Image (cartoon, rainbow, N blue to C red; front, side):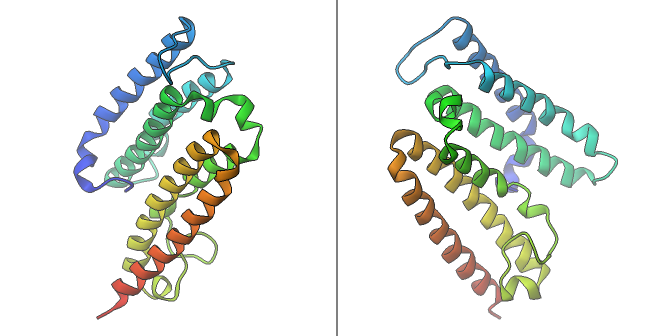
Length: 198
């Protein structure tokens, strides 16, 4: 649900694109290609982690098939492919953002965690722990779902942007994250309030 419904029929395109991008990343690493921002990583650890994550994402529909309906399963698969596509593009174009030296720093890790926190939000039922919990979302399942879809999309963008900003200038990371959280709170509150109006 990170992308509009139009993209749900494009799941196979994302699978192929992600596979090709991952192969391209490996070729850049093996042949030590340097072309502008495209550079090989200092270690193979991040690339191995991406390969493992891609294998899990490809296997996920088969693991979840007995537990979920087909439309929901396709949505979850697409969301995982979209997030993977974003991060493999970052790996190709801004490898310093995901390099292991930067992952030792909590800033890069926090950006990744922020973006991944939003992925399950559209699929969680109303509860007291996780999701956009506002008076309007507690009173309506429909408002809960729509607001959490918006929250998930914003969290993904906030996490990716703060990761990129933090890799360029570490002192801007917290500022970008705080601005993103303020936008998240304001946008989801205004949206839930708007949906609750008769």
